Image (cartoon, rainbow, N blue to C red; front, top):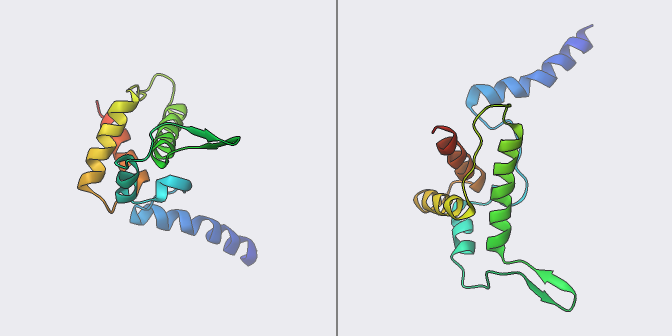
Length: 125
C-alpha cells in the first residue's frame, strides 16, 4: 500500500510543483525554444526568402521554418479551442509583424513565450 501511495505522489508532485511556480505544463519542440534574438536574425536575414531546389534537394530559409513553427502553434491553439469560443483569424503578415515587434523588445524571451503573448493578445479582443 505504501508503494502505491508513493507512486501516486511521485506522479502528481511534478504537476503541482509546475502549477505552483507558474511553469509551462507543456514542452515545445524545435524552433519554439530558440530565443527571440535568433528568430529576429533569421527573419531579418538577407538570405533568399523562397524555397530553393537544387539537385533534387529542397532548401528552406530559416525564416520560413520559424514562421511555419509559429503558424503551427497558432493552429494548435485554434484546434484546441472549444466550440463557439474565439479563434485566431489573422493573416501571416500581421502575425509576423506582431511577433517581430514583441521579440525586438524581449530578445531573450523564448519564441514559444512570444507567440503565447500574441495568442493572448488576439483572444483578449
